[in-house]
Length: 291
Image (cartoon, rainbow, N blue to C red; front, side, top):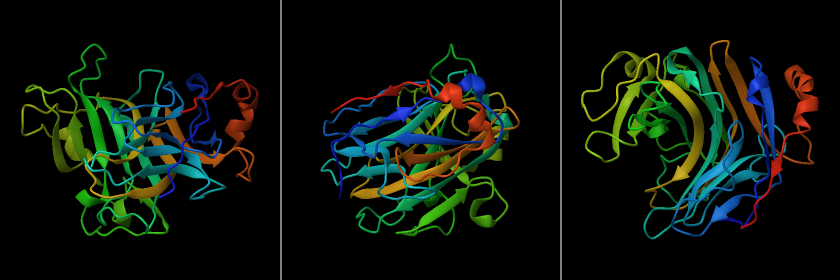
């Protein structure tokens, strides 16, 4: 497994200039952030920018050329085999404007890759998550968590393909014209522990109360604060792969596809929207941190 001591370099994207249906290229320097320690670490945390987060026990994430997709790179994700099955690595994006309402979610898709050298069970692949606040009130924090997509909780998807890019559209799962199942993890519920509930699609989450009062009930007013992709945590084996072309849309208010590329290589031409923002993008801060 090619885990590297690394620096992840990312450019911030200005939320105030978000354009509908934008194709945004996010650049890295070709190396991944890794952390050998057992506590979660990030390379930097910022709104309206992708960053490595929750990296521990030799996990790694960042933009590299290991698995090129729509250009010369992708978001690399790796979690080595670990005695406690507790290696982890995420790549995350948080909205700086307070987020968007779950009821307006209109697109949610991404491309992912599993290397056949991975030794973890065959149903594992990079997960994608929506970070929610159930009541949409930033003043209450015990109703926050993730809605998580993994193929394991959808029918007829194990083992997953290896050594090839796979595109999953969560609004049209496996081309069947229906939304994929998403499972919930709640960070701070009534009994003080992290709880999980499985096998409900987006419509279920929006319209049906949770059967257990320890879980928050979601609605059209639930706020989505961001999203992340990640691997590891409880995986009894090693994983290596990547993610690219992450798309998230909320009606006409926000519609963005993020393409991850390595600086200095051949990449797709920017969209018209990005050309309009060229002057501002040139001023975006590039943050470096060495481990």
